[in-house]
Length: 357
Image (tube, rainbow, N blue to C red; front, side, top):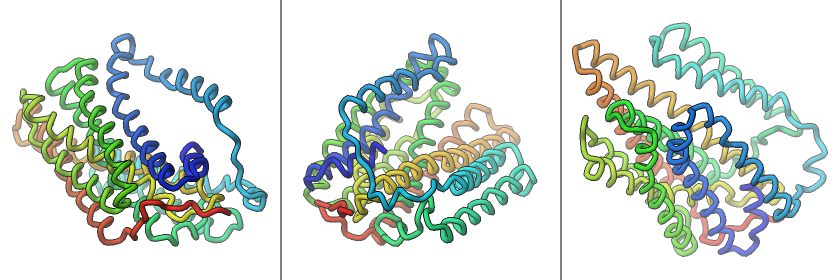
């Protein structure tokens, strides 16, 4: 809803470009400061992390009521019944796929623990697509995916978020379990990332307005790939300043560029009525990419480490090798995303329009 409002409230073209880029970047910035804040919270009690959303929600309710004007789609768009069945099928299908991938961390790929939820999840997703193609008011109208730029932007978002969230998870394990760092020290290690992503947001907002989305998004993915390759040089007992920090800064600036690119490309040529639909699809792509990427890459890291331990490798070194493998695969995924952008993304003007309904 918030992302949809951004697309509708900023009617001046250059301002919309900047607003969408800043919105996406601030979302990434929030994710960056999450580990820093949580490092402080868990020192009191790890159970307190489940209350983090309470002050956020209170602030949001007060701010939205006081500051945000109402916005509605055309009446004809909202007359149908909500697609409850579509929502259930999409959620159940994706949950099955992710659960199967997670189970692969402790079971063989051919075991029932992995195959049953995977196949059931995929079957339910097929049923979801079939349903959406038949009903009059679908949760996600298939016509929405006729625009190549929006489709490409959301596919690349899957690639990006799969690596982005996995990097945070595995790097945190490396510092806390491998290096013995405290939660606070680990959180503070991400502070330069927050500064870097802020710089990336500012730079990319100006660049998108001048040269367009495609080169900015491509550059963001390439920078992110370089950064994660640099981070893959980490060693047991290694130096944060020489091994981790340079890669973190590359990834941070690249992330700022990427979020700005996703934000603009994902609402390319949408109607006013479809602005929130575009927002929902983009946010879902980020969440799905993070969940699937974490399940796949973390599973590969774990299985690689288990194999090395079974052959006599020191557990600490084996775990590190698993993290490095996941990082390097992630770099390949990001390069693949950059190639998709370069080949498939249509030219998005520096001043895109959200088409009025």
